[in-house]
Amino acid sequence: MPRNFPIVTDRTLLRRLSPTDLADFQSYRRDEEVGRYQGWLAQSEVAALDFLNSSSVADFFKPGIWFQMGIAERETDVLIGDIGICRSASESECEIGFTLCRQSQGLGLGSEAVAAAVTYIFEETDTHRVIGITDSRNIAAIKLLHTVGLQHTQTKEAIFRGSLCKEHHFELHRPPT
Ligand SMILES: CC(C)(COP(=O)(O)OP(=O)(O)OC[C@H]1O[C@@H](n2cnc3c(N)ncnc32)[C@H](O)[C@@H]1OP(=O)(O)O)[C@@H](O)C(=O)NCCC(=O)NCCS
Image (tube, rainbow, N blue to C red; front, side, top):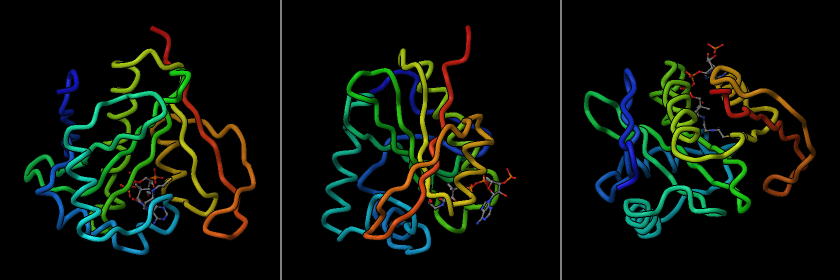
C-alpha cells in the first residue's frame, strides 16, 4: 500500500480504483461530454475491468508510467472520478490529469480532490513541479488548475484526434518549506 493513502478531504476520498467500480467507472468514461478533451477513449467492459484490476495494485510514482487513483464520495465511497499522475523519467516533474462524472461537476469537488493530490505529490516525492496540460477550450479544467495554484506558462499548437488545437500548459513549483 502506498504511504499515507487513501487521502481524505472534506467531501472526497482519494483511493485505489477497484474492479467493483466497473459500473460507475464505465458510466463516466463512456460519457462523450466527459471524454471530449481527454487523451483516453471509452473502453470495452473487458478492457475497463482489466484497467481497474491493474490500477488496484499498480505502483505509485514509477518514472514514465501513469497511475490512476479513484475519486470517491467520502460519505458513500461511490466512485465519481479519477486522477492520473505520471512522474517524468527524470523524476523532476509530475503531470496530473483529472476526470469527474457529470453529476458531480461544478460543485468544487474536482478542485478539492486535485488540490489534495497535488499536496500528496509534493509530500511523497521530491519532484520539483507539478504540471497540467489542457485544451484551451476546456474552461472548467483551466479554472480548476488556477484554483489549485498552477500558473499558465505557455500555449502550444497540438493535434488532438486529427484536428489542430491549442494546449495550455500549467505548472506549480514545489512550495518552499
Ligand atoms: C475539469 C473537471 C474535473 C472540473 O471539475 P469540477 O468539480 O466541475 O470543478 P470545480 O467544481 O472544482 O470547478 C472549477 C471551476 O470551473 C468552473 N466550472 C465547472 N464546470 C464548468 C463548465 N462546464 N464550464 C465553465 N466553468 C466550469 C467552476 O465554476 C469553477 O470555477 P470558479 O473557480 O471560478 O468557481 C470536470 O469539469 C471534468 O471532469 N471535465 C471532464 C474531464 C476533463 O476535461 N478533464 C480535464 C482534462 S485536462
